[in-house]
Image (cartoon, rainbow over all chains, first blue to last red; front, side):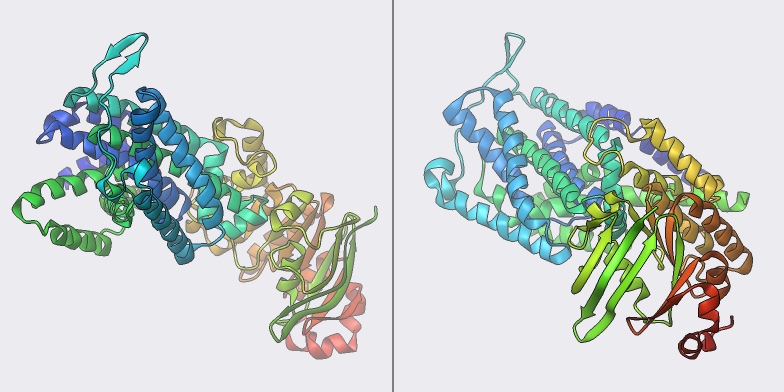
Length: 330
Length: 248
């Protein structure tokens, strides 16, 4: 009983100061995982899941095609570095913008439909992007992927810094993850963020209050695409390579699994989901090549018994406690 | 004070069913009129046509001398038409306060991504005033889904009021309420009717007779008769189709 109370207090505290807690945790994070590259991978995928969550958790749209925005961000960054300009800042910015632009275009066509139709449209368009990349060998390398992305140093205030050691690269990625968290936090607390919630809660009512719900969802989709694009860019820098499977629907499925595992509608959930997913992949893939089976079982159990995800379940427990105390006061 | 709303031969068919059939209705600015009729008479559909939730099959809707028939629902809301739905239609997982605040915000901004929503003082103050008016200021921090049926009904009216309407459509605001709650809601309607045009759909005849200046009776989608409460009470046809079935 004592211990449970303590957990609830911790969960509440993390909920209240989630940004500070995430930052503090991520600063020590690379030192507590088996190897530093895993930590980098987890926060990159966590960022992707965070962007995806703008769609699913905050707006209630299940997109099955987020691989497109992640992949396009990755390819853009790679192509910029190889062909245009060896500047990391510009390459990342280009990835973010291209992710957002593609979401602007495809989102316009998808958000007119809802539910399963929306999911199928996003999937169809993402596969379209996949096949374009697959066929356009000159630009993307096709089936072989985009190889030999140069490990250019980072230019900062006239200095040139080599960021391609595991620990430096981790903190470089963390910088962008935290920047995205700050921006998203700001957006969710803005008037637009509140409209977003209203549209998710009750679109009919939001419309009768005078909100153009379709445009609201469209902008949310674009923001989501831009963050996914940025995470894809970071992934390309991390691997110095973009595989064609980055754009494949399995990538879309993976980000959905991560988000559901961790829990929707919070900042922490997607990172927990990405962490659990990649950690299990890391551990299980050594034991068996069929590690996906175990992950699948865990996923099914999670959806059946903890539908609000790992973080959602912890948070619900603490809220339930609060709810009981409110009732007893009355 | 002129005519604020006029419908001309308004018709809505769903496949073979004509839910609203050639209804021509009008209301003066500042007036409070009621629409009554048995279940399935087309009252709620009539409302949904006015607010633009359904597109009419034929006919015209004129609001403040402008044709709003083809306007999308959000645009009609911005012209100044609001509805309190029959089946409560709130934002369930948002707080009571946020339900009203986000409705009030619709008059100011949608795509403001940068400022803090709660730092808009005038919206907070407006919302507080409305919560006080509908008597929910003490539960404003509560999640709306946890409210009692009566409180939800009043929150429904609060959301509609927060959009600062010129014309308010109330769809059975006292349905399912206890006698004291009904009393409260009638008082609320009388209070807000002072600065507002209201069309009321209601089954409780006592409420209708007490507050409305004019009553319209719909029957199977068509306008049966219109008149003052006294006219309606003494009308033989109305008695036959409707009032005979319920206590007066």
